[in-house]
Amino acid sequence: MADAALRIMANVFLSSMLLLWPMQAWAQEPFFKGKTVRIVVGFAAGGGFDTYSRAIARYWGRHIPGNPSIIVENMAGAGSLIAANHVYKAARPDGLTIGNFGGGLFMQQLKGGAGIEFDARKFEFLGVPVQDNRSCVFTKASGITSMERWMAAKSPVKVGATAPGDLVHDGPKILQAALGLPIHLVSGYKGTADIRLAAEAGELAGGCWGWDSIKATWSRALDNGDAIMVVQMVSKPHPDLPKVPLAISYAKSDDARLLIEAGVTIPAITNRPYVVTPGTPKDRVQMLRKAFDATMKDPEFVADAKKSRIDLEPISGEDVQKMVAGMFNLSPALIAKLRDALK
Image (tube, rainbow, N blue to C red; front, side, top):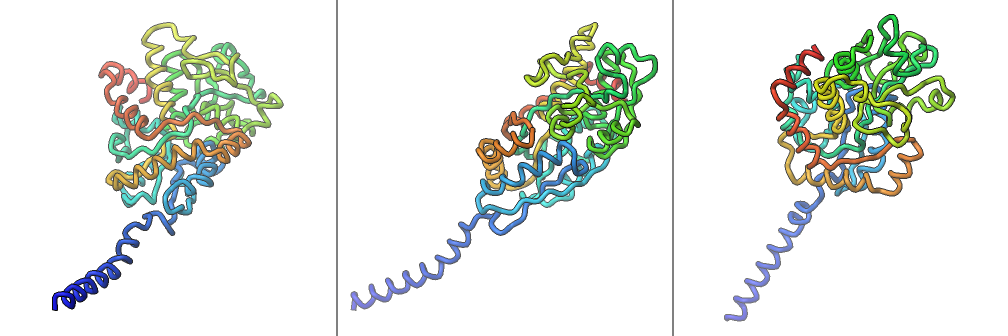
């Protein structure tokens, strides 16, 4: 009798386990399997942000558990503010929408800029592929072939820009305030690709954006001398540009130097962030962060990046999170000076 009871209990237990097994297997299925992840780029196709995101998208999915497909969607406008606001407040917090927009928008939030509908400190940062070397490039035809010629220009030099909050716009404004450079800022372009085309057409003298983007998208003009690097807005020269002067070396006061450092140099480090919406489950954030780090080390991706002439100097999502939080600890006096420079 006891043996029969034991056999019945064993059969019931076995049947229960067989019923539970499919549920357990389903629960262990990677969330991203069979899904499509969108990278929402805040600038037009053909520019530096777009170039980086399309290169990264080809490899990122292979390092995410479940190997999802990754597509790039351009959502240009307002210096990438439209994309940043979209990822923050409209995208679902499920990890399937990744934002890539200008980190200069964080400074806009700090100084109380119009149209900011996000809190930068609440984004979940996944990483940055390269620390921007903000530089100014002009066409040979414009006559602005050196910093000295720019400073001596008899009329304001037409510099192309996107919109307030993007360093393509704010960088020249900071230089104008700190160094007194003659600048006529022509804003409203959707991205650096449009600025480049306008410069080639003679509508602009040039513009100021990341060296990595400049050399990736304007290589022919650089090689034949039709485009000339004039100044770098960084703390030390890029290895590719040892003879191009630093803007900070032209500063005549400590206030001017601090303005360039806080307004351009520091924000440039975190200027190409990849983020997901606040509230995204932490385990998915960690998956995406680890996959981003692995992509940056993927030999095939590194070789592809080199072939495409895009630099890699990645920063982890955790470190970017700390840097952005630190920006909100600047002194009120310095924030006031930045606000005056960028108004």
